[in-house]
Image (cartoon, rainbow, N blue to C red; front, top):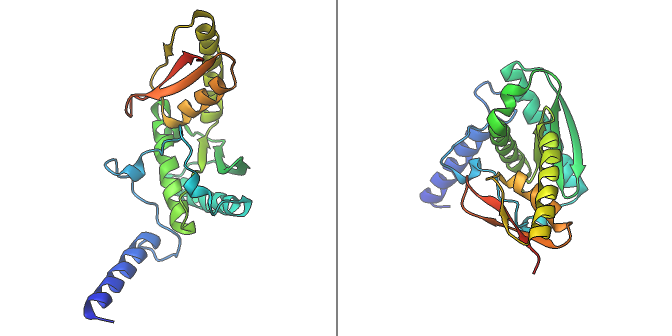
Length: 211
């Protein structure tokens, strides 16, 4: 191995150790920092499913993702001195983790902004441990569950109006999770279809009459 190769290996090992082990040397993965300028800190689009990441999928991997996420979030709650229980589940083709109980509003943030950031950090921690890109869904304090119910009602009402009038209707800007909920509702409704338009953070769903 050349001197250049040795330097590359040493740099890689040093970088790996810095990411995986906190200063205290406990051996637990350190909490990754959010980087607003990085695409990794942005919720991945879910309007169009990426089938390329499903090659290593399966209940075993999803359960492992949930376990890693649960450990990560437990350490985070300890650091923040926040009480909360962690529920792990598998919903369809993705792991689902929910933090319940306690005073969790600070972990949700305005319109779920903090929740979105924590979900991305948790996904990064899972991907670092499993080596597979994660589509894990995080809920805190039932925020997503309530938002899903509200969006289902909103999308159903919009579908009825568009089916009757034949005029397209543009909904308010939504994040990828919210748009996915709306698209699913519209797909199940008769006489209408949906598309997304615009760029983040102003991307929105447009409900149109079926062709």
